[in-house]
Length: 343
Image (cartoon, rainbow, N blue to C red; front, side, top):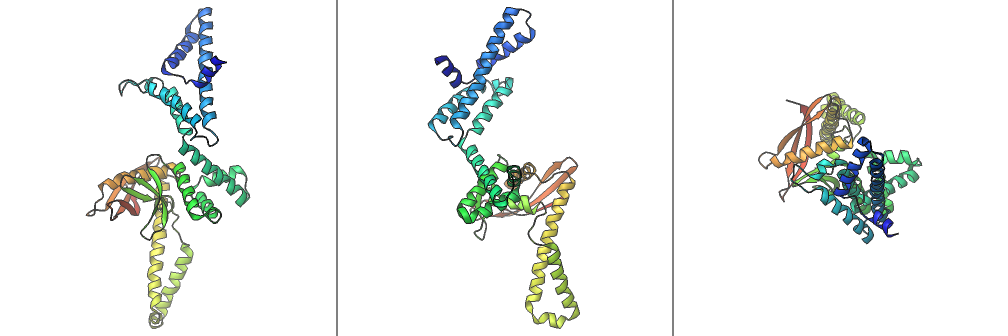
């Protein structure tokens, strides 16, 4: 019993990983039956230890138990094993010799963290809610929640049930799960006090909608309806300038419509340019664009608020131009974005 407990609670250390590799080589190359049998026994014992160690950590930390003392104890053992792989000079670490084992340990720590479990629980809750709300199966609900538009729709429909504040937190956690780990994701207010899911890195901030909606051709508004209304007012002005001028709101409305039409057309143009370059609308591509723009913000100043970056796709490169608003606290928020030909 004590031997079994030891197997289940210990993690495969660097020395044990070395023993495992030696046993594998002996099984592959040795012609001596006795040596091969001994190597097989060693290999089987270490493999069992490796697998059962994973199971011990996952069992202690799964089902929302990431914050428990039992999980903390198991994770400490994994962290100790991880430290063993990180010894040596930076260019000659043991993790370089055994990247498979090191990657396994890092992954185990990632999937058993409180943050990872919170994100998974949020995703599961949204999937379950979408199944009931929209009457679809789990696979359809999961695929829907994994898209940005779908996630926003589900979060918005949950708001009356759980409250706007809770729905906003869910949206942030879903954003963290979907987007890059190289920047933070928070819910931050704009100039009008309305909160937006925002990518944050250093002193730079990007409202996620600017990239995942606006840059991807999804600016709000019905282009056909707006153009029809604009053309109707334009025809009225041509038909009778005097009658048109009687209502000052006509000219103001035309200005508003012109800006809205330009905004939607620019949004669609950007989406077309990115698609043509092969930079398709995926979470990873959008994260890459945000990451590059956030880094470029370091060069933005009150004297020159413009920056640009180049993003590459399988069919070509695209230059993305950004204009930043310098906020009173010195931080920078993305104001406008546009695409252009790479030069």
